[in-house]
Image (tube, rainbow, N blue to C red):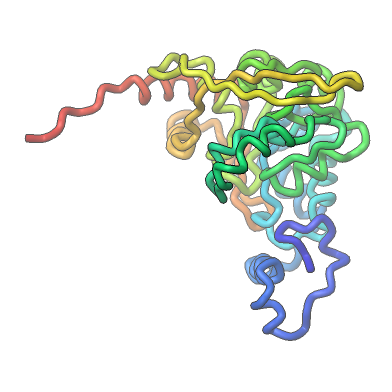
Amino acid sequence: MAPTEPTSLALISYPTHPSAVSENPRCAAEAQVISRTTGGPITGSRLVTDLRALGVTPGMTLLVHSSLSSLGWVVDGAETVVLALEEALGSTVTLMMPAYSYDAPEPSEWENPPVPESWWATIREEWPPYDGRWARSQHLGVIAETFRTQPGTLRSPHPSLSFSARGPQAPTLVGNHSLENAAGDGSPLARLYDLGGYVLLLGVGHDSNSSLHLSETRAHWPGREEMRSRKGKWVREGRVEEFLLLDFNWHSEEFGSLGKDLESETRSVSIGPVGISESRLMPQRTLVDFGVRWIEHHRNKVPDPPSA
């Protein structure tokens, strides 16, 4: 059966009996995508036209966050989306996507679903060492994972919150990635800022906009100094070594409101359809700088006293 976000939709054989669809959640989800897709299947040429209309132009350095199912039923799935992005950007494209693997597990914090406390020590001890050559990305959708596995794509050396990139600027973007503050000034997000890059939210909202974590690290707000530490193991030059990650206590639950204010106050975000989704394109420097001001204003605000 087809996965929720299939890698190659063209090869799927759909069940003919209605009950077979209703009894299989994956098939039911696929059927919902098909029913939502208007104007025929989403083709690569349609995606290229939509991306160019949104403002994607040749030569951009572009960070993409994406959801395949939000675009509608795409002919040949994620591969078509990646090819459309490359065609819209041209031969000088530098494309970057998240490749998070979360390979510094802390089972005591797992919620969806949680695991028994009696398992925690075993999970920590037996979790395999991270190896960026093959560790798959998680919770990012099939577009990001398809891009990560293409020949010539580079991956930043971070065992939990890595990024992948391909193109002339890829070594600059992902060649180094600090283990202290994965979204800060030692990260691919900061290198994208230095290069004057853009962010494309392809069928997803600002809650997926990772560049706002760079804003968090540059802003001053109560609680910013609180750090989380994680330990783990990874493969470095053929040897298994231990690592220690240090990161801020991020608060992405505000990003939706921040994004709405960005759009209304700066007029810097291009909004339009790509496939059947509403997508957004924005200059990352404007996004990050606005995010710093917004976070400092809203997180430093003194709450109103309770009414009598």
